[in-house]
Image (cartoon, rainbow, N blue to C red; front, side, top):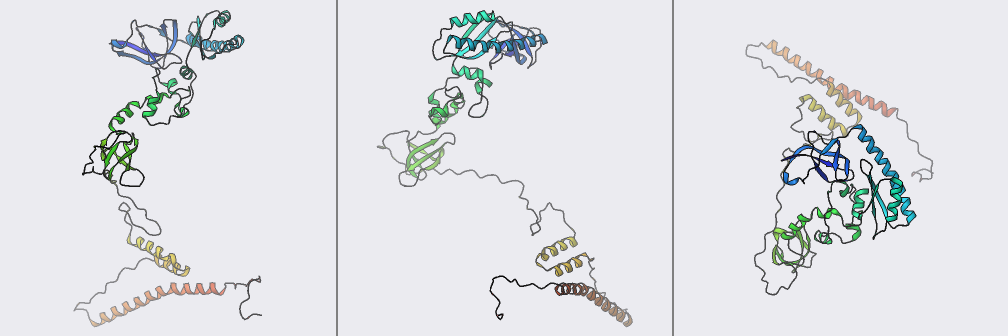
Length: 421
């Protein structure tokens, strides 16, 4: 095992291993490393860690130091120099009338070398351009021609999915993509729909290619002759992700039906003749979807003013309160007098039920007569108290009816009532 740190340079997604020596570097710190073109300013993506010796390319270059404030100012001056060099180079290209497009300018850390990246349809003779740039910047000049995919990686942007381009975010290197991948995934072969910002086939076609290739091996081909629970037929389309197919049945004029892979018995895979193919008398079993698990907690019903079922979690209310709520629900269709009477009755304290006392054999006749008189007097008082609210409600209703103004008949153009001139 070898101790290394992972370093990523500006404008690149690929990481490189460097020997930290006696330094302890954490992820996110900037460091000065030694490269083939001199010292470079880079960022540490992963701190000190151990890797197998087979994954290290010898010789392993060392880390010079952790970046200081002076190194950060130098890097900032190099960025400003790159912006000025970009504008000057574009003017020189226009002056020499060269068919090339400048993409990016990079300067090494010590400023001894400037690299110009450009794209062009063919070969470009830029010898005179190099001489002019060397005269202006007094440093080593290098021009590199890149492709359209590298151009998209350097410039960046958003893909049709709405996210930043994969090549500028995390892709270390470009993977080969072919039109066969689009055919395998049943995608539209319209170039505008399967092409990326760079104008080439989208890199994301490669991501799920292995899954589609495995699904193709499991599923029958299009136009295959199969036997289904409803009879024999030919496959009209295949859905690889759902592992479903549409079959046009021989004994039915209905549109093609959808079946699962387990419901099919392949009699002939792919196109061909049916001669010599025997159709089994026993048809495949129909697929039955597994039953969904019922929810553990029962559905809790809500109790509304219109009446409803009380849940078990609701605390039990006193008997008097339950009675008042029932009276309130019954009183929705009553008149105002009846509602007022019911509210007054509800506000009165409930009367305790009187149990008649049976006199024993020792009770005298005088005691019996006194007890009967008291019970009759109390019953009469109770009847009077119950009748008083009803009498008051009737009197109030009569007063309101007596003082209600009479309605006047409008003098419009309507028909006159019978009996009037």
